[in-house]
Image (cartoon, rainbow, N blue to C red; front, side):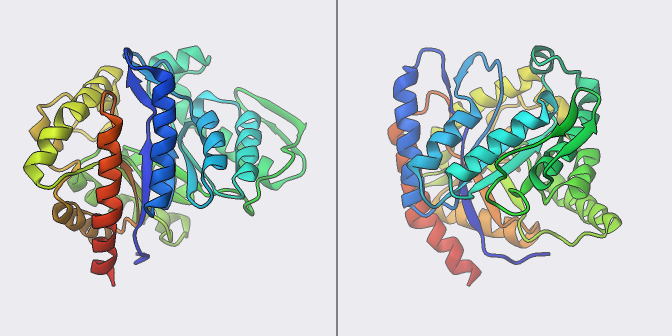
Length: 344
């Protein structure tokens, strides 16, 4: 297992309440991302969903393209692309373009997706999503590494197709595969550069699932990856009580939406209700507390699981921009130095 020092990422959903001024929200999002780079964050992740009511939501690739110009150092993670919905040539060329625009800073995060409304809108079928993802991922890698690709998939055909230009990163941007359930974790071991550990499963479940991942890597003859990213809901305030009081209503609203979308059905048996009361939901799932509390939880993730790139969702719909900026500052000025000191 890797002992690489912890990297810190900011996850931006770009989701906002229906009554918020969306242009103002965009301007605030850019300000938050630039502040994250200044405060020592290592990456910025843009998530992806379609048909996001009751939220307004910005789309992934345009935001990453804009951030390629607004930032100069942080890696830009498309995390995750709902790859089962798409055609591989389109994704290959768009990500290659953003990789060039950013000077080779793109991460390609992919996963199955699960919402019927999204699959129907793109003419795909949920029951075929595993096959669709594997075909698309195979095609994506070939388009990035071969001059001409001929390949017939169940939902596309490449006839001497090319992706020109190629991404700057050689052989291609790192591929992180998101997975909730054990079969998907095994797929991540087989096809990805790493498992992108999801934000929803309990930490106790992930401790068991990391063994599934290790065994799958062994079966494939692959070493444990140098980079093991995990996404989590994170909030920090002066005390744990204050952090729970402030963040609770915002996170609860988001997870009630997840439950209505069917996200709970994708989780391990026995933990499929994301509509629980906040205290019960948060217990072994979120990183919330004082700077010392949050530091301890992050260090423990590194020691116990091997996570060395923590992607943090710190902002939810309706949360004031000023509160997001305050949270960024506490993380950058108090938590990150403490984590680094604990790892020395």
